Image (cartoon, rainbow, N blue to C red; front, side):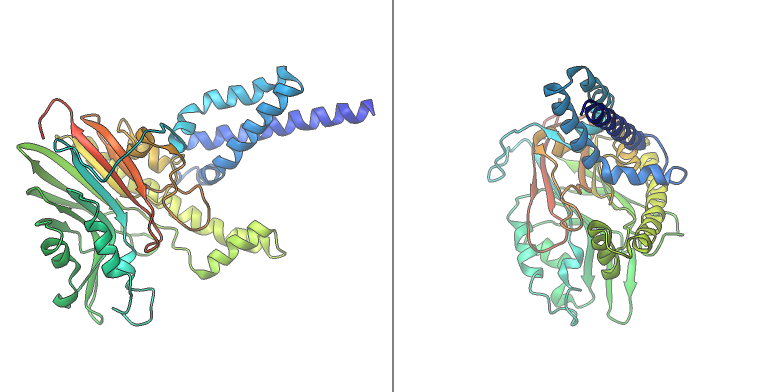
Length: 377
């Protein structure tokens, strides 16, 4: 019996140590470029699991062998920056039914082409108008959309609707992709109720897995103060139905788990590498910006990734600043995927922020109210 207890204790210590090492390696993604360290980059997706296990070990040792809790404690302290990026610790109240007249409200949303392609017949979706009406109810001043769809048919123009019905008179559209057969354009877009003075478009590397959207920016005059708004949609993993099936195979440990794992790892590796280079491009554009800035969009990467940390740099994370919890924005695969962000520079005071749940897209929208510090909006 004594030898069994000794073996069990050593086993738990070893497991605690192994999980701690994996947790710290996952934390290293903050500065390791995924093109060279893609295997470690994959650990970012398991960060929540490692974190939970470390906390469980910490509690377990407190009640059994307190001296061994130092293993988890040291790991958690070293990884605090990553923990705080992953989890918001600010249970602040928010009320988006009212807006401070001295603040600006920004909304970002991957609209999945306004749900136009979920049916076989283009234009048959019943979600387009409810989605547009939902946007109108948010009383935003600036809108940033990814996977924006604009048909050639002016009667169904989303741009015209947002301009006329929602009173966003200014916009800049990347028009990344065109389809001559069905006659539509897609890309990222920024709408503003304030005048857009200048606009910019930066194209990413052409050797992407398939389609990827641009980085765009607009200089907006907000009551005499110039601010720059960026939005982008970074490389997706582009999971198809077969890939989601592979996720289930891995999750349930079925017989074909090895083949499924290889297929998923290949797609994740390629996407991670490309997003790393895209993050480098975004960072260069942020660094040369002469104005207070906000970057929003679908980064397709979690808060413990190189993509997130490299783009964020010294910027603020609006969700973490004013919310409690994980803030999941992508509805498939895992309940821990926060991949849509609003990151303002420190010129702004974050008044409130929230995730807007909706049943229409595969992403949830994110909203925030910002106030330019030391200046009157």
